Length: 213
Image (cartoon, rainbow, N blue to C red; front, side, top):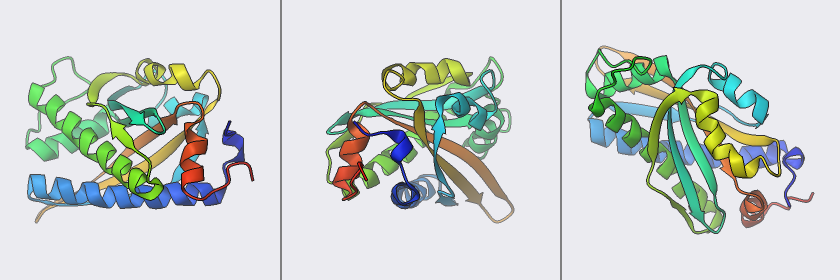
């Protein structure tokens, strides 16, 4: 079984490169869908203890907007795309041209939830597609689900399986830059990749990395 504590900087460099390719593909899809320039990049990939996951998005009680999907196939696992509520509000306001969107409120327009779901779907799908291309593994996403809640309440759902065998998750930071003639807006999001037991070793072996080194 792969030990998260054996993950090296070289392993993370591989995941970051895959993340940047996925981000580039996602930016192309979002730009075409919204008819505006969108750039994306992955500035860092880290292995974080479970206790620090919520701190990455503002703390256990911070309200976040999240898109969750399962990964089926050769290396099953879970994936979250998560934004603090204020960042998600700013992003979706720009995307659907509705300045009233507030993910911290109790009255969220259905259009805003749909847009958030689609953004998470495109980003997660693009990353997973890049990972599948690199590893030649069959990795299929389930339909995404969007949730607005406190970060710990959302993460607990995906941590049930992996927390049985480990204490860490892979955090893929993402920067989304929207540009038009008048404005440039940057949003910082976070992917949490939570491979099921044994899946991380399968992924790294498929990338030509000996996970036991």
